[in-house]
Length: 256
Image (cartoon, rainbow, N blue to C red; front, side, top):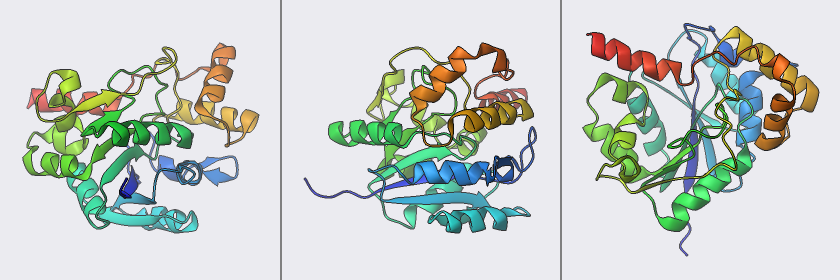
């Protein structure tokens, strides 16, 4: 089989209405972004990791961390995240693109590899583990062809489609009844939708700090999940809504 090029792009910005500068906040003696990139760069089926950031104040701090972790950075649009993502990708001429977000410090590199392998093996236009949301929040991985990203970039016009990169693809993939993109979902071994390993609010950061102090930063997603399940009293972030930012975009667009 001809060698294909796969890059992973992680979105990282300083501004955040709920937890400002969250990717720069410490978890133990490292920043959230350090931990995220150290784990992401362990994915065996990814040739290059790119940090897609913005031109906001303090974004240079994100670039410094990216370089420290051996990754490339790109600065682009604050609000048109789809454009930022596309411009970051096209520079590297990949065949396949992995999308993750940097507020997920414990992203599992082996899970990344599993989604990449499923996508490439079956030549899907789009593949993820979020079409059915049974994995923990914070283990969200999307993989798509560069041609799929380019089509979305060219054709997506709604505000929420530009702010969140893949909604145009979701709504037009055959998994969801669309006709433009072939797609598949990587099944989870169980329903762990209620488990949060992402950082959107202060309570999330407290839980992730406790988890890292207990287990370190090198465990697979399932071990972290089982530890969280075994300690329900520590789940002080369990009432936070999954994908709240995306849902807020949809509501704002509807209200306009």
